[in-house]
Image (cartoon, rainbow, N blue to C red; front, side, top):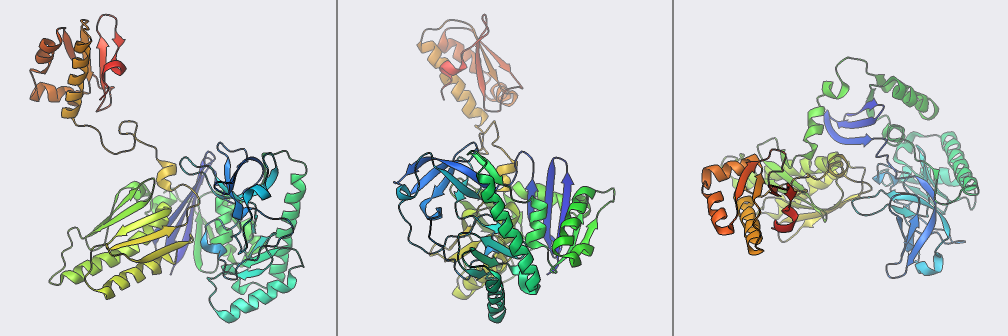
Length: 518
């Protein structure tokens, strides 16, 4: 599989595109007003301890307090033992907090008190109405190792599946880890690393941890203690290996940063970094700018003529597969199987590309044979295996649905790059002209019931006013007779399509809120 990284950087935005076999599969966007926070370490102050949900809220200086679960609290004099198959590469920010070890969780009220200072690391950014999620089990990521001060074991990424290599790496790193110094996870890119490389990086990470602890002695909570590296350097650290054929950068400054960073950790890869200096924008030349604009469309077309519909809601993401114009030839089961197989590949790609997380429900077209259902599920899981976020797809349910989860550490591109329409408030629908006219009629009836006699101007959107003139030309006369006072109809292009405005003509007083209830 051919993998490439494209970096488009401006003073106000950095975008990184990941291509696999020439196809866009992942997009990362970093802006000063929406900086990535996962992996940042804060000195926080406990604001509230809630035994009912076994959690605490910690003030770290963000708009909303951070959520800390009892299982994520470090207990003094207790070492957390991590599973050998922990996979630090399951997230695109591998320094975002160590995974919890297997231990008995003590009651939160026994661990924390209100007003107490505590060192925490962000594992999940604020999403929607929720504040960030944090852990006290800090982890610091390097290129080859993840150092966890509160763990006690050497783990190896499960993406290194050769048993002998896992044992070799675990033994090599275990020998150089001082007693009571914490735990380490060996990362996927470490297969060709030397002992000297491991020692150098481990010492760097341990010194970083000592610096963090020293810094907390001079800070007053809430305060930022350690900031995770920027998106470009973090991606180079986590992804750039011999498997990446090329990194193209259109900014001289970012190019210099990347090459300087690589000189220290992987000098053999420097020649694969190319500075793009052509006049045509990098993303336009590679033909991916259009794909990025299509990120927020509901419909994604499939090669054979079918399509999928992606709907994001507060609770879950629903994906519906349709055969569309593809009808196959004679065998309907083959037609359905081909559409579902193509949909499985595209669903896995779209989840990565849109950075969608949480609960996802996929409604594939019903298949008659169990063998075909298993093949489609296998295809989906195979392509999900390329995802750096943790995913899990369950078997096809009795209703023909595939339920799955995908790790969510930040808002999706849909949430971070768009906002609710001020007209429809995010529903994607507005009331029809007929509905607005009936609403106006009810408002006039309420005025008449109160005995009002002032002349009133009815202001409507031009499309609604046109509907009245073409379909209900007697509307104003009929309402005047019913109400007993003069009415004037005017179109107002400044109104929303389903908005009305009632104004007393003489005083020019707006009385819409008083009478236009529904």
